[in-house]
Length: 275
Ligand SMILES: NC(=O)c1ccc[n+]([C@@H]2O[C@H](COP(=O)([O-])OP(=O)(O)OC[C@H]3O[C@@H](n4cnc5c(N)ncnc54)[C@H](O)[C@@H]3O)[C@@H](O)[C@H]2O)c1
Image (cartoon, rainbow, N blue to C red; front, side):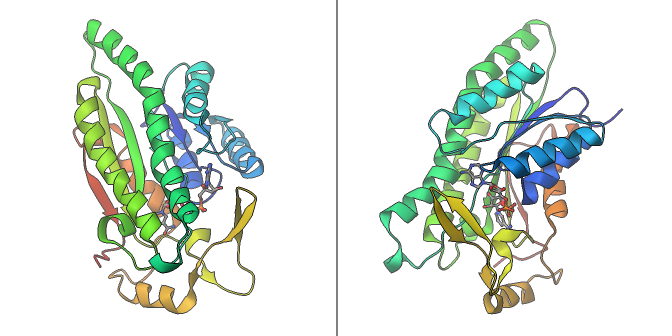
C-alpha cells in the first residue's frame, strides 16, 4: 500500500522546480495529481512522465492570478478524479528591487501571485471540502485533508531587496494560521513550508545567459548575483543549497498520514540557515 493511494492532489506551478518534483513524489505514492503551470509544455511533460511511470495525472494549464483560475483548478480535480484531498499553493516567482525602485505594479504582482491566487484557490475549495466533511461525519468517518502553502524565509525573516516578495510570503503565513483555525472542523490540516535556498531557476547564479519567465508578456530575469548567492550559502550550516527533490520531500511530509495532527505550523526548510 502506497502512502497516498486514493488521494487527489492539486499543485500550482508544478511544471518546473519544486512543484514538479512534488508532483512526481505524490503520484509515485499513489495520488492522482492535477498539474498546473503558466506554461503548457512543462505542465504536459510532467503529466506524461507521471503517466509513463504508471501514475495518474492531468494538466490544468493557466495563470493562477486569473480571476477564474481557482474555481477551474478545484473543478478539474473534482470532475476528473472525483475528490480533493491535498492542495499545494506553490506557483510563484520573484521581482526583486529595493523599496525606492519598486513600482506599484511590481509590488502588486507579488501580492497577486503569492497571496490573492492561493486565497482564491482555497476559497474555491471551501464548499467542496465542507460538503465532503459533512458527509464523512454523517458516516462516522474522519478523513484528514491537507493544505500546504509555500512560503519563504524572506517571508518569515525578511530579505533586503524583496519587500514585495517578503510581504506576500509573510501574508501566506497569516493565511495558513487563520485557515488552520477555520478548517480544523473540516478535518483539514493547513501548514506552510518556508524555504531557504533551493536550487531552481529562481536561485541560479546569474550569468550571461539568464533564464527569464514571461509574466504578462514581460521577460523577467531570474536568479541571484553569484556573490550574494555564495555569501548566503556560506551561512547555511549544511553548506549547500537544497535540491528541488529535498524541498518536495519536506512538503510531502505534511501531505502524508503521519502528519495528521500537525496544523497551523510553519516548517522552515533551509539546511539549518536561520538568518
Ligand atoms: N527556490 C527557492 O530557493 C525558493 C525559496 C523560497 C521559496 N520558494 C518558493 O517555492 C515556489 C516554487 O519555486 P521554484 O523555486 O520551484 O521556482 P521555479 O521557477 O522552478 O518553478 C515555479 C513554477 O511556477 C510557475 N509559475 C509562476 N508563476 C505562475 C503563475 N502566475 N501561474 C501558474 N504558474 C506559475 C512557473 O512557470 C514555474 O514552472 C515559489 O512559490 C517560490 O517563491 C522557492
